[in-house]
Image 1 (cartoon, helix red, strand yellow):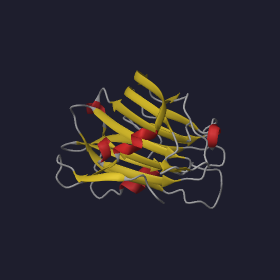
Image 2 (cartoon, helix red, strand yellow):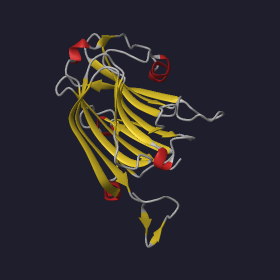
Image 3 (tube, one colour):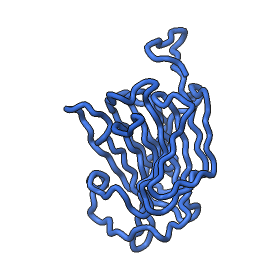
Image 4 (cartoon, one colour):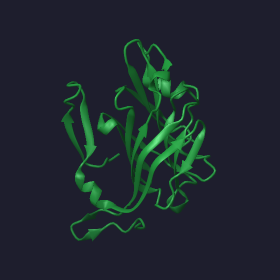
Length: 233
């Protein structure tokens, strides 16, 4: 799988983690824009991000967690984040919340990029998941779920996510690129103009969409040759 070109640097905050982020030239592909600001997502709620081509999009969203201290207490020592993403209950206190990408209208197909927040003995820890288990109605495909942990600051109480969607590839960058995941999915229903994008919150605690910007992405041009296999925005 060929990913979007990225910048890579050492995180000056932790000193022991690489940060990855799409090169700034990718932003030149942004076209039509949709914004959502200050929208409250109650427990069990879902909100469609409409008005863009959801099968080819660039999304940036900042989630605000009003009551971080109410996070579930959990001993994460020795826990495999990938297994936790696969086996965790569908609903917790803070999360899972995030995006449903390449989703069919009836949600029978979707890839969930989500976060949960836990409280350990001395800090808050986030779990980022990329869940492909419902990415396609087709059988015989790789539908692996991926997961990783990251530290959550108590001030500000926010978690950021950027996702790049290009038909069958979803690249996601959490917390400014401190955690990254790439997925290759093969939806049967959620293709082209039939693909939808949603923001969701399956936790019991409300989450605030502090700001969300979603852009339709134009085709990249190499020299004077344009790939005509996909429609433009």
